Length: 105
Image 1 (cartoon, rainbow, N blue to C red):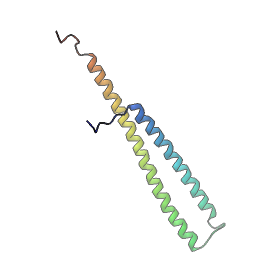
Image 2 (image 1 turned 60 degrees about the vertical axis):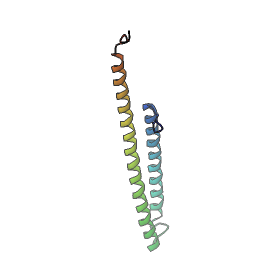
Image 3 (image 1 turned 180 degrees about the vertical axis):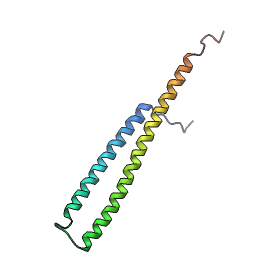
Image 4 (image 1 turned 90 degrees about the horizontal axis):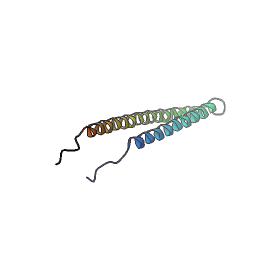
């Protein structure tokens, strides 16, 4: 039994909420970085180097948005697992309460 995972539905939901919060922070920071980079375009910096930098930054932004989507999916899965866990626990509790307590004589 060394591979038993001990966690409660509440812990799963709390973890999901923390992931969701961090994902939102990451998205906000990415948007702020993008706005900063775009504010330099043409106004302060122009030319081939600027275009190359913008292209590479856009690629980085796309990767960060993919990561954000993956985190959102992870949050959804954690919440689904927590709900399934709670439903199963409630079912088991109800089943156990219907068992006879006077079976052993």
